[in-house]
Length: 146
Image (cartoon, rainbow, N blue to C red; front, side, top):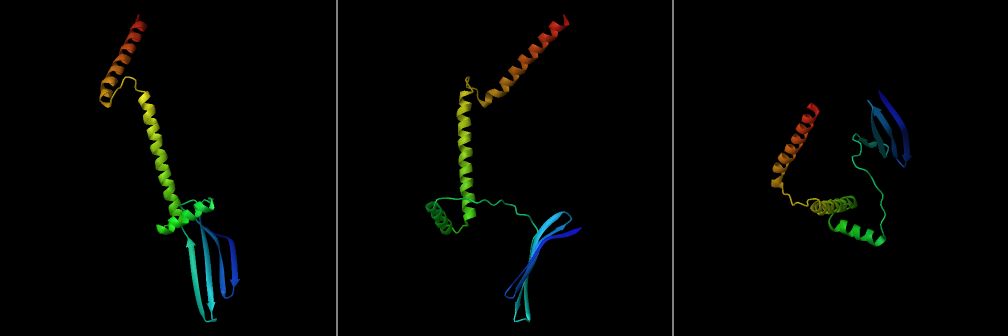
């Protein structure tokens, strides 16, 4: 089933355009057709369809004028878009926060190992705990059998 919705058209000094949204099999696609009339004999046209939905989200941010000017200058210096510059800033901030969290967890973990166990101690400790649990279970079974 094909549905066309939100159809609109424009006419501006030789430019004719129309577009809207089309739904085919549940997939909604935006479309626009424009044609430019030149000397009433040549027809120039452009058809564009967005077949894939946007895979990124758009945010509006605000910053002080000095910071904005600095960010724009840095983006121009590095031949980047403002979007890419801000994405990289977020990546760096996120990596910094993750590193900080890991460091904090490491400090916390140091306080949670009062006996100073190491990774090599783990197999021995597992065997000891399992032996203790087995002994407790056998003692309960012996009491229940009496």
